[in-house]
Image (cartoon, rainbow, N blue to C red; front, top):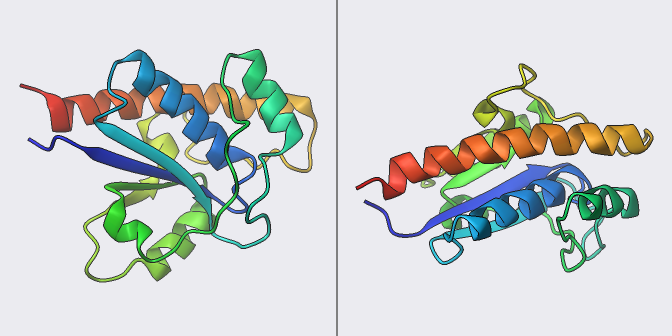
Length: 162
């Protein structure tokens, strides 16, 4: 059994969907008492928002549900992420295709779609809320909460089951 698991969530710019997933998953991991066993990060496939805070609308929606994103900053995914993280999870197919293209051959990361872990959503892509209204950020949170719970259960069973 592995005693440390690492997860990175990836979207395009790392200011809406992936930092939301990071904040929500971190909350669930901390609530489960697994913060020392599971490391969590987020990144973007593009360099648009390196060093930027998450989108203010994403922060506001997250804060209303008790998730804090204020300390997060945008960064771009790098080749080393595929060696450092056990799970490299994309928010949509376009970003997944980029990750698959840049995934080095010596990587053991599990690269896939985050919503594959959702239990109550049939969608497999988290839509980008950037150009929409507040309801888009709420929808993202609904999807992310569902997938985060499923991912945590998967990690518990796969890596920490006795």
